[in-house]
Structure formats: structure tokens, C-alpha cells
Image (cartoon, rainbow, N blue to C red):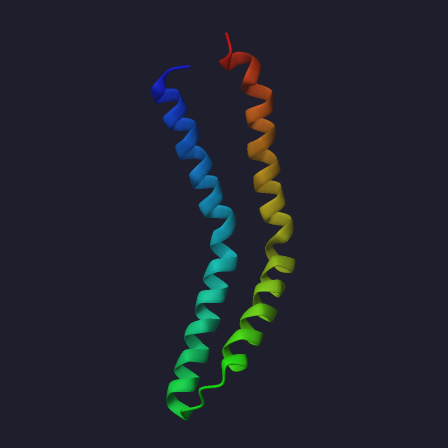
Length: 89
């Protein structure tokens, strides 16, 4: 294995990680932003007001995007496991 190959595999791993985590992170970010604006406008500084909705929305995002996320991870893992014998030659 060459250093270029290892770096390419690491890059592909990080890209897969980013694509898989992106939907949940974006949903959590948007909900956090909306709650922060709401708190700023109403001057309510309750900690549970920002924490509980983010937890609920994150869970819902995992339910909605979970099958897609699992498919992406499974495809990536299958590709690596199938290609290991080719890479070791």
C-alpha cells in the first residue's frame, strides 16, 4: 500500500463520515438556531427550552435518516471488506 492509497482511503472515510452525520447535525443546528432566536426575542433564558427540543428533533432525525445512514455505512464497509484481498497483493 502506498501513502497515496492510504490517504485516499482516509479521505473517502472522512467523506463518508461527513455525509452520514450531515443530516442530523443540520437538523440540530437549525432547531438550535430557531430556539436561540426565540429566546432572544422573548428574553426567556430557560436551559431546558433549548435542550429538550434539540434532543427530540435529533432523535426524530435519526429515525427518519437512520436507514439511509445505515445503508451508506454498510456500503462503505462492504466495499472495504471486498477490496482487502486486492489491496494486499
